[in-house]
Amino acid sequence: MCGGVVDEVSGGLLITTGISAAGFTQLHCGDGVDDTRAIASAATYFDRRRLGWRIISERPSPAADAFAARRGVAREPLYPVMAMPVSGTPPPLETPLALTTAGDLADLRAFVDCAAAGYRMDPALLKPIAGERALADDSLRFHLGRVDGRCVAVSVSVRHAQTVGVYFVAVRRGYRRRGFGATITGHAIREGADDNVDTAVLQATSSGYPLYAGMGFAKIADYHLWDLPAR
Image (cartoon, rainbow, N blue to C red; front, side, top):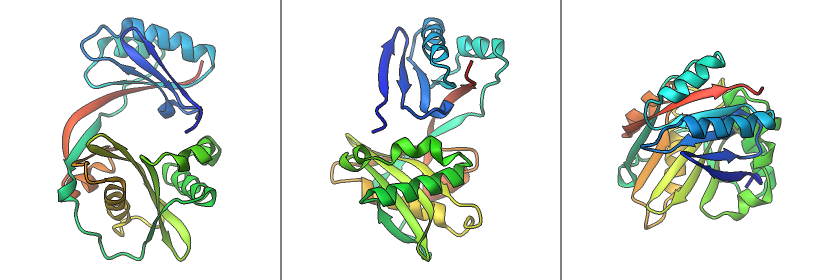
């Protein structure tokens, strides 16, 4: 939806979304392989483009640790992958949130503004999201929660095979601890799933983990992350 590319390299996948932030420009290391060649390929690719980038592995990676150490970067805290049956989604909480799914570019712009505020990002970084491609993909849905007309909570659902992934859950500061995070997460599951979907998955930050565990999500794996600045 951002005009990005995915390239296969020996030992991994390079993902460049067109958003110039490390979390959106990544190397995903393959399973059961030596990461050294993949990391070298990614470094050449992203350094040439002067992009910050992220290494992601579903297991410890001595090669990534060594490479990041040479660049003065420590591994990020573990990034748990969590899952739960869609049938176990808690009922909606009683909150003042007016829940909708983005239907036009104005909604996407409101999503970008709220997501950037929630994650303390420059909204300009996320502007590539707010385009026609995002609206045209039926497996991808952007969810908004408004209070008095202002978007204060957002999430994204991505439907694939028998899963619905929940991403980009964010609540504006000043509106937290009111159940809005759980509400917008549950809305993403219900609106993103269809009759073939039986499992909801997400990746939790350390601050979000207690919320998702309280909703019924259980950890099934850990992502190991290294965020590398542009060279």
